[in-house]
View 1 (tube, helix red, strand yellow):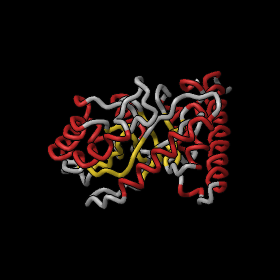
View 2 (spheres, rainbow, N blue to C red):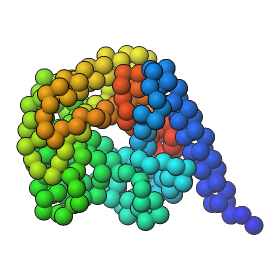
View 3 (cartoon, helix red, strand yellow):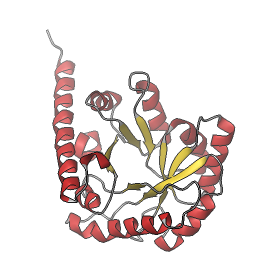
View 4 (cartoon, rainbow, N blue to C red):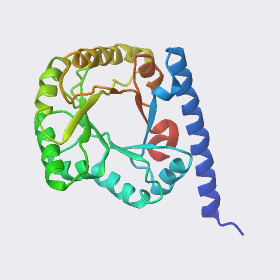
Length: 247
């Protein structure tokens, strides 16, 4: 006889399956409307406060990119899942303190939240001393909206940070990340995403050696379609897949 826990787990998987399918369809439609290929946009499924078995269900449904806000939580989930899902890419998307840089540098594939020279230096040192194979990809976090509650440098400071981060061995600047303000109408976020896309083009034109600037990480559950229309190729989706706080 099936146990109540089994029924709950099956129901949870079906909810995740339906939600993920809806997100994939909307991402593809947004890309097509923008004249882009749906394959240009990667979905980073955000698993903050989501239990391991729900994350496993998402990976079984073909998710290849997982984003975590906290280093400790991400490391634990990777340890539990990486043997069964070795192709998954792990993204550190939350604010990164310098004392967590060593773990982040060795356990994550891309760090989205480099917002100052100290964290860049700490990541570089961790890569050099920790024996990581290959460089660590990083994104510069830009606080386009200027909100005091958000981390990141202002757009006017981004080039200086780029040049500083690019001096450090073992890390490679792959692009930019921003978080738009919460808005009742997602269209209100468009100027933020447009500004970041312009900034990325300007930085690409600098032609700095070792800087690919090929990733724009912008857009979350409430605004990812607008972000895609403005050039995002990494969208960070948690609530739309798992519900509020994994609910």
